[in-house]
Image 1: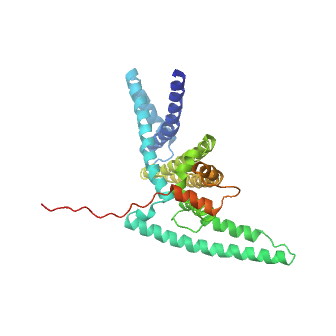
Image 2: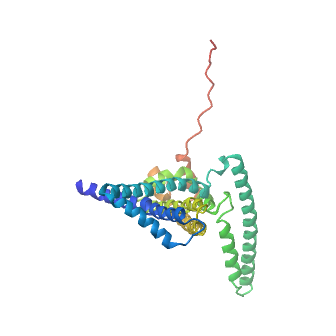
Image 3: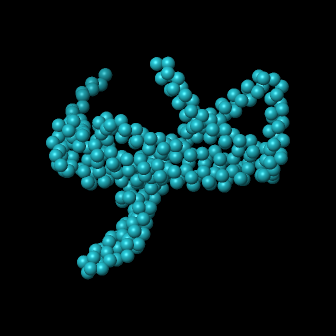
Amino acid sequence: MDGFLTELGKRLADRWLTLLVLPGALYLAVLVAAVTLGHTHPFDIGRLATQITTWATSSRRGFGGQVVLIMATLAGAAAAGLLTQSLGSVVERLWLAADWQTWPPAARHLAHWRVLRRRRRWNAAVSAYHQHRERAARARTQGQHADPAPRHTAWRRMTRIASEQPARPTWCGDRIHAVAVRVDRDLHLELTVVWPYLWLTMPDTTRAEITTARQALTRATVLSAWTVPYLVLAAWWWPAAPLAACIAIAGLARTRTATDTYALLLEAATRLHTRDLAKKLGVEMSGAITPEAADGVTRLLHSRIPPLTEPPNIRSR
């Protein structure tokens, strides 16, 4: 038991250091540079070194002063990390946009405009892709081989917009939504209903892979959230603006990659383990997953609508 608690403490300390203190300490270093140098001397390293030396000299007056300085730095770094992690939750909600129809009116109208615009672009890309496919099919019937490059280019152009017809204002949101669309179309499964039960029947290795992918998505959105505090520093120190732009680009790339990995694992786990869930529910499923059997699984797990009852008689006093 003592060994378990020791190992747990080490892991928590590592996560605290990696996720909170180190990014926060880097931000504090940039904050010190911004306050010390400003717009007038943005790259005056000597001035920054002189200021840091002055602070270090003032803390040498006693051991207590050094301890206070170290503790204040750690606390400030941890506070910056916690604040940015909270901001990361907001960024994740915006990126995934699962509830965009409940956003405030202005944001909801903007999201709706984005959905319609992305849908028009996607429909045009899909039409172009199918035209290339039809040309390739006609060429095969004539014993010819069409150049696949235009077809592959059209496919990449379509998937850059969305994997399925856009229903959310962002690529990441549509990538997650595409899993539910495909599972419903191919397997007749309602993912929001079936997923909690699938999760409980999956082996630990599968759940560990999905959990790791979900944590990677969270870390990616937190990285994107660091753009905001660095962008604030640009008001005092202009080099913070290109630094914020680099963080935003890296955060966007990591978020898209993490979202795609997470969506792939969600779909793969659903297709692989639906049969195990059906067996536990007593639904016969031999061979391929049939729509009838999948409909039976969904019906068993779907809660029925509460019956309509007569309102109680309330007597007025």
